[in-house]
Image (cartoon, rainbow, N blue to C red):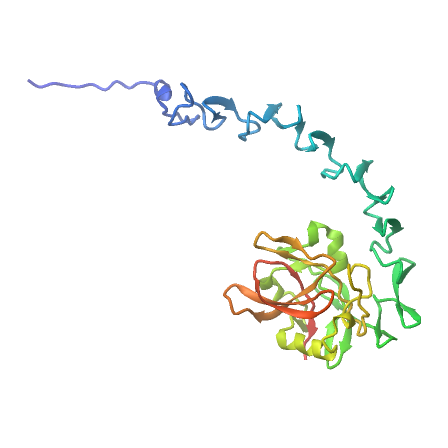
Length: 348
């Protein structure tokens, strides 16, 4: 006997309870508790179905959704992560869009003030040293014990004279003028100084690329200490007529200074333990660096670190020259995915 089977065309919506889908909504293939949920607008948590918040999942035990804004638990209350932050189970409004330390900082008119001794100071215009507050000089901090501020310029002591490190050099306790050149790429002007047979930039490079960093992600640190670059960028970032020095060129500089780190370091309170004498106008400042293997920002105030053009023996590494509180040394196998300052040397 011949048998005929007929398949009736049924609406797709009848299959939704089986974890199927229609043209508009996609439903889960597995149940959440006893029901199915819409993957586009819902999520499953602990066998319960919740609506997404602004298109995102969240933790219903510690977070809640209100008007498509996500609120997180802080102590016994909830706070809006966009405009507030939680510290020590207390809720605070952000200051200019930023979180801060309520124990040592305060917010006034969206400006952040930090504690210095018994008072507070505005970090954008002032700085704190030895529990005293000073106005910045031309937007920069300085050493009020060994430097002075005149007309927004910082002056340092050279022997018995005052000199402007931005335009002059102190070489063997004698003041001389630094030369300068303009980087045609961004019209930034750099000072440079001749040390022995070499001509070095007297400050770190500040040319911005798509792959650069400032220490602690603070743009002010780039203005003071220079920009941090990864090694591949550093190899080609110096302006025309200048290049990234290799190990041989760094060694020659160290030999001329008698491997005396102090002679290459700036006479500045930025050095936490041992200021330099800056005998040759190299003016190295301890801006630290960024370690790419989860080390983060490190050694601010302790290390003036510079990329070398010499590659390390280990694949994916390069050499880094450093000036710390006591020595002028080499880290021979520094990883490429770190960010370090660049000091350029003039082509011969």
